[in-house]
Length: 196
Image 1 (cartoon, one colour):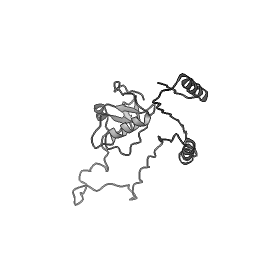
Image 2: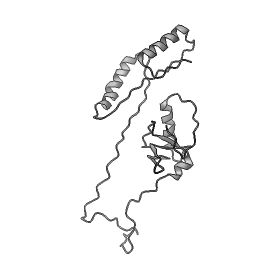
Image 3: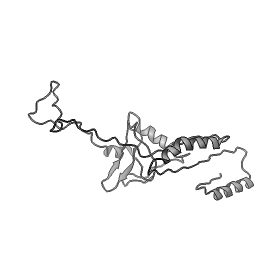
Image 4: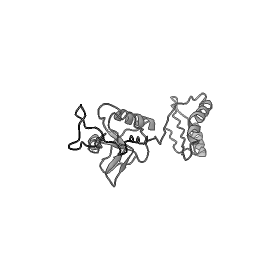
């Protein structure tokens, strides 16, 4: 996750996985009040703006943690908060007011209603699921059929799968087992392999 020039380094303790960070960000930006930080899809250094800025009440914000997303200090997020959008044109001097004192909204000259703005469709999906160690093949097969195939059949989609194994062995792992695990991880192309 990059750090914009306006944000100093943020200390985060070691995370169990990416889902923990996503849930933390969601909790911070969906509350009624501003949380300990804001979130943005990315920072545009040229214009010094945050695209997809979410500070509070952002229940519909899609939190995606990738190389573009940023976590922002609350005071900096507030300084970059977009101005509220006016729903209608500013009142025109001398225009007749409606009975409630609000001038009527101006529409197109031909009287047809304004076309609604196109809906912004989400472009990312991220999911984490726990899989039973007793029957992983069956559960993985269901996930592939019901989720992965739904995404891979969309033209132009790029889907990446990551299997994370987190095992606690209270009795400890002997040297032979550790060597076997590490050799198998290397053979299978594991990106990360940690034994501690």
